[in-house]
Picture 1 (cartoon, rainbow, N blue to C red):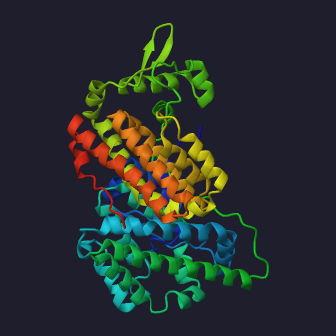
Picture 2: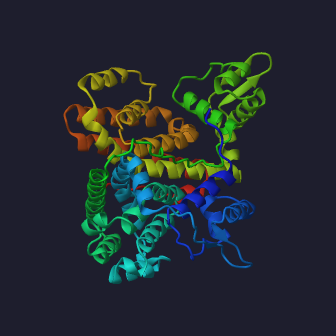
Length: 487
């Protein structure tokens, strides 16, 4: 099982990387501890520990009652060193931009609908860059405006993804140390920022989606051209040893027992452990997940609280039909309610990103694979969408996109009860019918209709789960979750 990451570790690593990548320039202050607590979902104690560690490394300066200031460092890499480092990572950097171009347009269109861009915290600074060019603040104010817009919608997964891209895109290098990129993309940079702001202010989501897609594709093409030019000018291009893209939306909360709960929950939801079956013995589960028996017991106890299993003395743990009464009591618990909201946000995110992912993967399906998938769709108790998602994941060649899809799917494991058990006789056949129709479209070569159909499957789940949570469990927070439109 993947090692846990402490809350301190993930905040420290991200803040340090943010400083080293030049996202916050020397002389500028970090966000306040209150803002960081809200951003990372951690206590002020954790943020203060991070500040102390960054100060010990000489990265920031702390003064009483003031936000920490980023300090200039003597060991800042020379441009030649930066170039060598960039070329070592050129393939992974390009994949970051290619993924960004695929998924950022739907995220920004969704977040900016009914959003007054002009009241965002970084709007005025971004407009100054629009009027005066990069000399008025560089790429940071427009980038910060993008973060503001994604954050305002309430789904923190969107802004977390945006921040993660910033740790891998090396934008400081391209905009401040690479004249070739500045000449080919940033020439007239004031208009680039202005165009993006004008797009985000628009009312028609379809037009915004098309315009943002074109803008981000132009950015990606410019990055690719720049990397090729830099490779050609380097006498000996270094071997590729780029950083692997990482996004962990459960960072600091991915406890071992929670991972076991989610995995068993998924297997119960998919029918691998059906009602009436016994789970493996505690010792077997401990070996399987490489954890202690006490951790397994903690996981089984939570599953029993959810109403999915029941432990019988001397016999083991048996899978049972979920009990609505027990689930209702759990929903009233604040910790459980937070997880339920996270699950709904993950569904919302999946609706937005699965279409471009399916569209990119569609041409790689072979006739044999399509026939094998069709052959699987014979059992009325199966969840066909899960098989199609795995096939899409298999054909996802962009590593960052693969990571994002996988992690979003892991977040969805938590909510299989809400997805498939309520009104199972109606919900699952309808969902399977949608999945079959989508696969037929792909078989006929209609890749766009296939991608739309898969997005519709997750959209249907979100609509049903929202309705069920509000009406059955009076979980009124679910009513505020918007269902993304088709763009």
